[in-house]
Image (cartoon, rainbow, N blue to C red; front, side):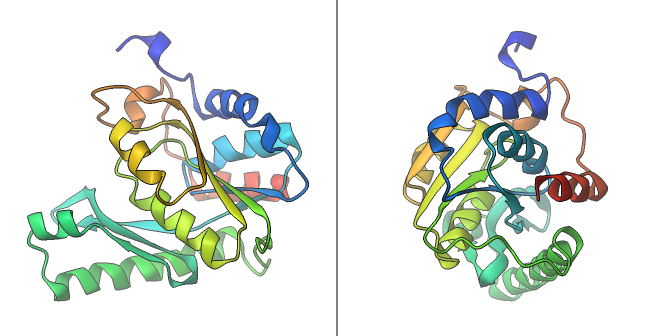
Length: 214
């Protein structure tokens, strides 16, 4: 993979996505970032298109001995998305599954407090929710994010990502009204491979960008 096949960083990815989302810049639209990696991308989009910015806190449910392999995800509003094929293939018993769910639900609560604090979430009822991440690999957290937006009353859901696995993007059309994905490379392996700078996003940066977006 050459440098021309990759985004320079999340800021560049946000700028390129914003160019594709100009027709979405309407009074009822809200930009919702999936933290942490989606926040810098979403912050650029919100700033360039003049839309409010908030987070949708979701957490991947990783297989205990292979944390990067998602067997589902949980999010705000009690949203739960399970990948039954992965659960079956990994032979995850119910006790193990419920333990992972409980742990990640606790982390969702912690991150909501950390990122949003006492501020209420931006209202979604009757509005267009533009859900943004820095990429889609398994699609578990994107599915959970879409579920949260629906639970909060969003009239329509748009998923906007710089890069994603083609088969996963196709499957996500079941849960999003529209998907904007700039790059669907064949042989996709990991989101970070499609960035020159894919440094970890810290909680402090998430907080700063959200305050600016407010």
